[in-house]
Image 1: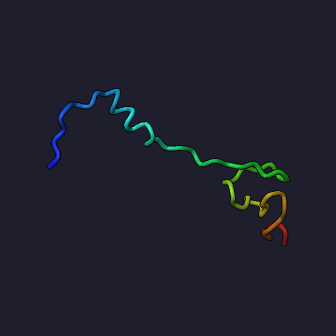
Image 2: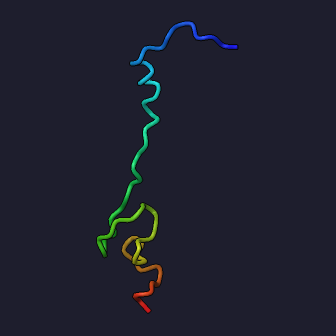
Image 3: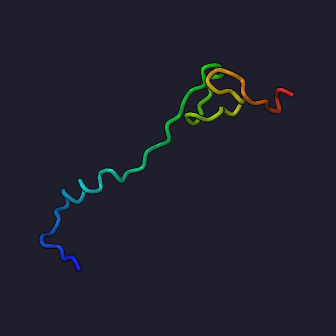
Length: 60
């Protein structure tokens, strides 16, 4: 079994864990409606990259 030879200082421990933080999901702003949505996803009104790609209940 591996045994630690020297104690890792709090500074080095923090450096070791530096990449374990959480990021907020990146969002995009729809150019036609101005709504925010997840990148590479359709906006709530059915637009994707400025084009209407999905019919919604408001359209019918």
